[in-house]
Length: 522
Image 1 (cartoon, rainbow, N blue to C red):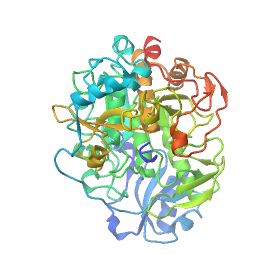
Image 2: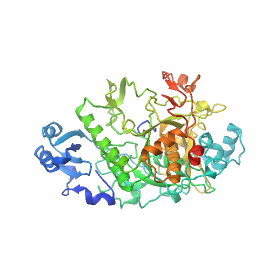
Image 3: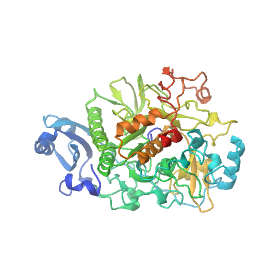
Image 4: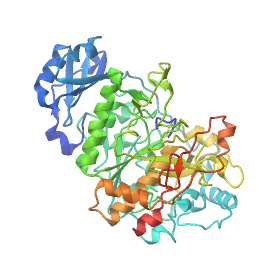
């Protein structure tokens, strides 16, 4: 994921009728915003308890999660005195950053130059397709998403994939033909920490399409991996004829807060999307521990929303994480809470603590590999791993290359780090002015798996979510525990995780490397 994180109540027009929206509140008058999980059998009593504790309800959604504002510094403790309240948690503070503007950043690579460099690096023809940057797409070749592979069998037509991320570049010529803007929705509000005014929307409305614009770049990148079209421009995705529905739950700085995640999951369920790709962890906690009252409430809120989406047939796919740890045996959390800046403390964690949405029951968990099909040095592992997919590592190229061992995909022209990516030789521009960037992380692995799941749904639209996940695992290329490791682990001096299990069921690769071709044939 992008800094792991990039790897908050309801909303879309289709669900407004079943979402209770309370009187207009001037949120500036309140000092804090909370997520409150209520007993749905006692909804009226719960609202009364919230108000008695000094809270004002903004919305109460269909899975019993309320967004509340309160000036009472003891609100969280006070409201939990009612039996109608399941749990409550602070939804973080507020901060803003400014968008960067300017021309093409210095050191941006031209498409033709980049394709030639990739062809030389990987020892292939510079005309390797299907699109001009095809020579750079080692990741698609690894999973057999090629003209002679899955593209000849199944391109995902008819499948609808939600990309729950930081939005999308609304002007990207190598992506937008596959994006359903009408169905796409934003879940970033005026009270969402680190959000820009340009990406904030009114709760319960999907009408502000301009707010979908991606100021982080991450969402545009993951969407392109899923379904960039084959059109003679730039790159091609795993399912190049699938439809993308952008679910903007992450801010310009890559934070995904609880109410935004909850709202996006419920909307995905209401839309009955085929698949949702999730490359983040829900802020501010990397691990939410059940023995901590506030964190337990976050677990309950996001789990309820995820269960709702799954019950409506949505296959949820999540990145494993970039902490390089074993999720089955967590020991320490050093980065939480990650908001506000400087709030993190080092604390012990154990199996009562979970990363969300990764460790929600039924979620397809994806680890990351590099071009040699070795586990990437940063990838989190564990026996909860369903499959693995290309995430990138510059230490697995035929000869060392500081950028081109990552994953190349579409990128946003309004990304705040555009100049930084160019300075690191990771930014590419095509003749039409569309940007592409080399990124690595399990954030990049999850959309590969989501794209393969889309191929399965395209061929068999009636399959249940559980069956789609089973086919995804069943068609994966089995990989045994490796006898060697990504050299990046030594370079960064990270401890090697112990791979347990056999080929087709181990903590590194799960059922194996996703195969677009085998899934397409299924």
